[in-house]
Image (cartoon, rainbow over all chains, first blue to last red; front, side):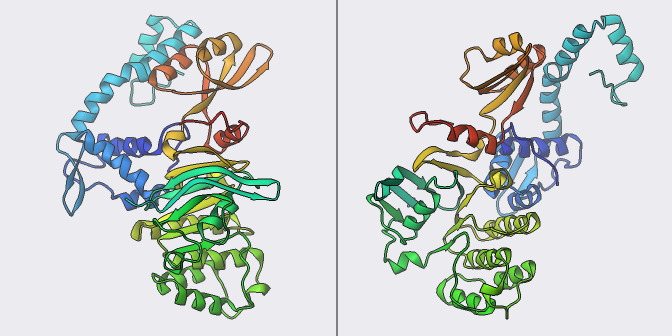
Length: 127
Length: 295
């Protein structure tokens, strides 16, 4: 079973995990999203919580309700999510990395060569 | 919308002992509510009053808008499974059959499935069963009744972790298919936390917390690291607990722990560890009733 952490409201985590699947292309545009009850059973959470997570994505127009059939991934949802995450990228990943680099005395040149040498695809783990 | 349960200024005293003190709460229909608190906090008393087995000393309770006591029309709409539920000298199969006559929405199919899941022998006398198996009989009746208001009071005495997970899974699955109002009193808070939509916590007969479970999550965290950085981070926040070891400090504070706060903690080289629901409630029960936790 996938694990959910303690600090973030469950419905936010449900929305984030669905968003991850959309960004990764596991759920492409037009695909049917898991139902409330499917999510509830999978994550072992209250169905109302799962519904709240889905509604969060509906409000952001990432998912769309088709009456009587269920929830579907909106066209362009992936691009929309990627755009948003790009904006968050610096503060979520880059700023903490720079802070740690400064703490360890890694200068900009070394950082640059790390980035160019390791590339993003094999982890680039600098922490 | 008529609440499934509404209690107004409910009080119950036994001689000079106060079991419930000015308890007011509302349980919305179609929700799973956790009734939490230490032993002796008043959870069972509250459930007994709700199910008409006991009278309040003061205040009033309504179930589906009606007084439950001696009200057959309302009592048939609810099922109450207690810890160590006593049974007449029945065999398992007989107890199940009698229950099936009483509850209008009884599901024979679900009952059979649960009996098989728990491996309950139909011919065995209930009093010859182990404690865990007796609990499984109560859970089977409580779920198969599909009562509009389903109350479980620590229903799993003697059940192991696997059997408890079975209970949670079956409860969730059947709740999703057949929505109803569930009140679950438990001290295994972390285990049941994700099932709960709403939590009510009692402490010494009073309500100290009444909030959506999602609002309670992430309301407190323990910040630890170099003492001066910790002090800087927690300035202006409500401090719940403070520990110090040499140059390091560990302080439990109230949220919010939004993106900015998390970034700040990182910049200060602090670790930010959110409290689980169980840990939160341990903290909350250390408060006097005056200092209610508002989530």
